[in-house]
Amino acid sequence: MSFFYRETLDGEALRASLSRTLRDFPILAGRMKRDSDGVLSVLCDDAGVRFVETHASVPMPDYGPRHTAKKGLDRHLSHAMPFWVVDRDTPLFTVKLTHMSGGGTILGLTMNHAVANGSSFMSFLESWAREHRGLGYAKPRHDRGVIDALAASATGDTRTGGAHLTVMERGRKAAFIGRILRGSLGGVTTVTTRFTADELATIKATATADLAGTGR
Image 1 (cartoon, rainbow, N blue to C red):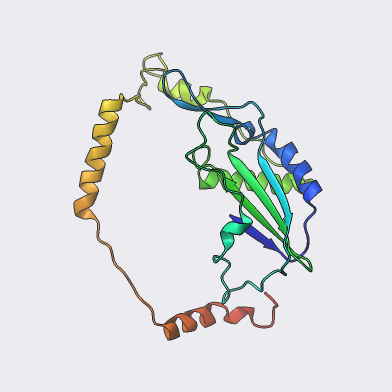
Image 2 (cartoon, rainbow, N blue to C red):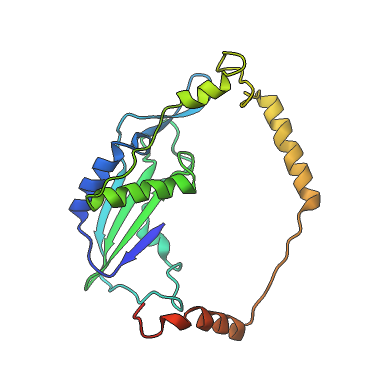
């Protein structure tokens, strides 16, 4: 994910606010490990995240509705190899701050999907933004005891599940996924819709009509 700013951001201040925010999100600063039983976990050892700050020799492109930023976006992201994470010193969250010539900054962020979904990612970014601005925010809860209590509600054993959760063996899990895949093959319809260049231009013009004269 990338954010584009017309003003130049303060990298030192961003590092400081990120460091403070990570105190409440220790998973992001941890490392992926494989337990003795083969289960993947995140060791919250405060190993840190990757923060790269660079300066580009070109000015900020005039991105907008008619000028997409997708082309060449990877150069503004600091990627961590997703297949070289387990039992390695590979960060689960990376930041790349690119200051453009003549002003403006691109803030590129990546997060390993194994530690957070889209909603959790946005929740973290909102917390970081509020911390950076000196505003308060609700601290996240990482207590797995809440889930364990649900799992043990019927049997008293967190390993076997209960009325709400079921711990499934690998064989049953594979069979369950197989049934889902087989069912999806026969009931999914793909529809492709194509627009001409003139139709796309009309759609864009209609969508941006209310922005005329606003400078946005």
